[in-house]
Image: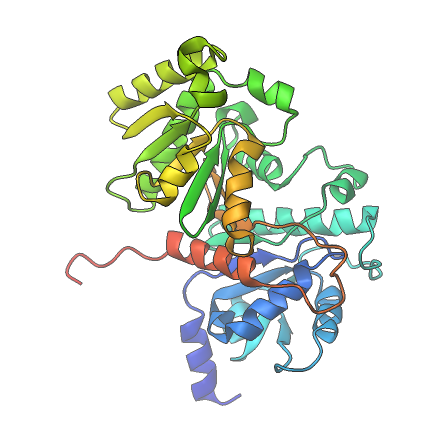
Length: 357
């Protein structure tokens, strides 16, 4: 590479990159990472991949023809990131080298590799070496087989961030926001049985969710965010006829949030509040439990869905789909949701404009 080309590469990579985890090596994560940069080569200077180089090379071989292959450049030290040649994707060996895992199969080895990449990426962002992290899909059973005590990314990142800041996990409350074109939804609870999730519909949990939601959008530069709150019961309880959670928990939380200056209304009937948000009445809906919020998001646009973790001292987004074991190795996996997650992370971490710009 000429001195001029090297200087240009260094200049392009001067800003902090996004780090993308490869996800479960037995799933479609490695393939959609490579497909994303095939489709959007303009992203190459802004990304570094935390994963396993042989796994990514296998994924590249699975993609076949139609587009030029992605050139991978292994990065062993941070200062070497500036010297990655133009047109190459920077890869850090973020997990212990192991034999390639079988595609489409749950395994302990795959779980270890996925978890190690997450830890590496989270550390890189928390230490200020990367601007944000985007996570490709993991398989919860593989993570459990590897002995990880977390049911998913959200809980694992919460624990890692809390440890980094030296606080107990319960002092770093987090929430999941799912979004697609026309709809954003924040969940009061995440991966729990429905019975347990209903038990968490309390004034304190709903209020905490509203605070975390409002703070996230303020941090992202929104001067105003309109929050609509879904009820738990049919017709939002119909004045207590169909349940009292609205009266005893949700209404008081909304009232307290409004006293704090948060622009929020509800509880609204859960069978119409998402439609009203889509029509522009609300910027984001707070849903009471996992499936209440995720079903409308996935119905409206799974291929463009983005998962954002709110409440962390870092930006983390991910595609809103799973490991798709049935597609692994076929080259047919769609990177659209991952690209949406990358764009969302870039938007949330773009530099503030200069005062006189």
